[in-house]
Structure formats: structure tokens, C-alpha cells
Image (cartoon, rainbow, N blue to C red; front, side, top):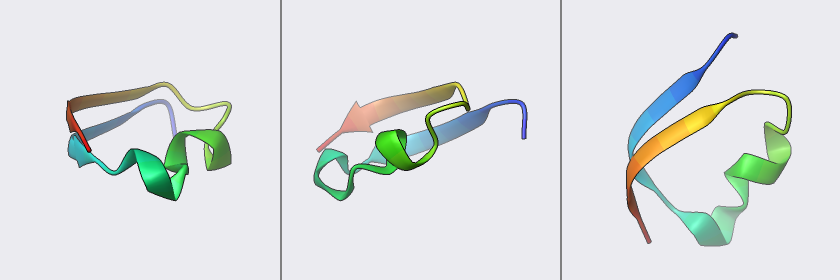
Length: 30
């Protein structure tokens, strides 16, 4: 996976930490 893009990111699930090596872009943060 080169990159991940999401409309909504749920920060409390800590998905960004689980995908440390993958650039992640999200529009809305909750």
C-alpha cells in the first residue's frame, strides 16, 4: 500500500498508529 485516503478518520481508534509506514490523508477528524 502506497497511501491511504479517508473521508472520515476516527482518532480514538488510533488507526494512524497501526499504519505507521503508510501516508494517511483524511478530510474530517473525530
